[in-house]
Amino acid sequence: MAIAARPATITPMVIAPPPRPTAFARFIAPARARPALWRLGLGLAIIAAAQAGCLFALVRGIALLQGASAADLWLGKLAIASTPQSALTLLALFTPLLVATAVVVRAVHKRPVRSLLGAGALRDAVRGAGVTFIVFTPLVGGAFALGLTQPNLPVAVWAAVLPLALAGVAVQTLAEEAIFRGYLTQQLAARFRTRLIWVGIPAVLFGLLHLDPGRLGAAAPAIVGAATLFGLIATDLTVRSGNLGTAWGVHFANNTVGLVVLGSPGSLTGLALRVSDQGTGDLAARPALILVSVLPLAIAWLILRRRRRT
Image 1: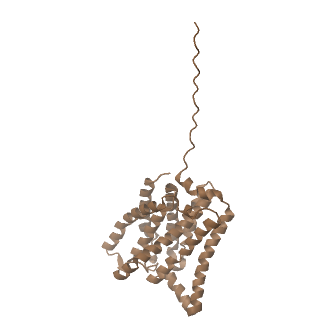
Image 2: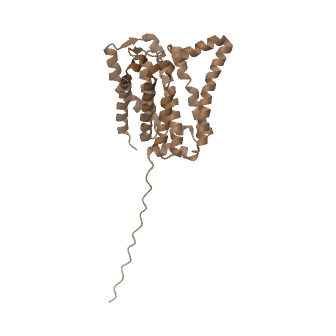
Image 3: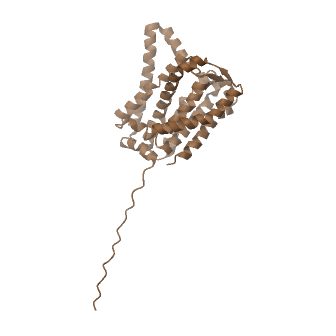
């Protein structure tokens, strides 16, 4: 009796889907289209020229209208920023940086301006700011309660300028994040694989941006070190979230506390409700005091990095 042969079973070949890009890979993807270093150099030069040109135009305009002495006086007040007007002007001068960065991304690198921010940036900014404010609250509240602060602005004046102060800090911190954790980090990460380059270079440059021996004196190295550490923290948060939001939120909350709530004597006190008893002279004598401001940032970073993993 003939036995019918069973048809052979053909096992279909299953092709595994490619691994999903990480959040950071999606964040830097738009920069990969035009990663040439000459474009990055040109972009940074345009951003610096825009800032310098805006400042020069303002000084020149004051000199023409009111004389050279008035222009020098205006620059002196801007450097100290001990009044609401001068402090708000200083924060407003970050607007050309932000606008120039947007123009460079669009004109030089031919990519959307929104690619600087990444997906979900606003949501993560609110989260980052909220966590950082909560972490700073016991520190600031303790300083107030223990009498470690001195009055600065009258409460009525402070409340009147508060909306403008918050808007100014938002622009200032967004401009710095857009340049360092957005534009610079994206373009370097698109060009180089090693983290030492695309993490280290923006962080060091960000730290050096805060070098001001004339105003900070012997405390300048400690401030540069703290700013560099913040740059590393902000980059790590950007890598994990895949956008600028978390880093911007932390930066905004940190600068709001330091510029609007509790300032340091001799250091941009024009918008602060109160100032600390300890100034740059104390920091120069005891650099370990910088830990008072660095520790809350580190705690906020540890909390936020656990919430988002690439």
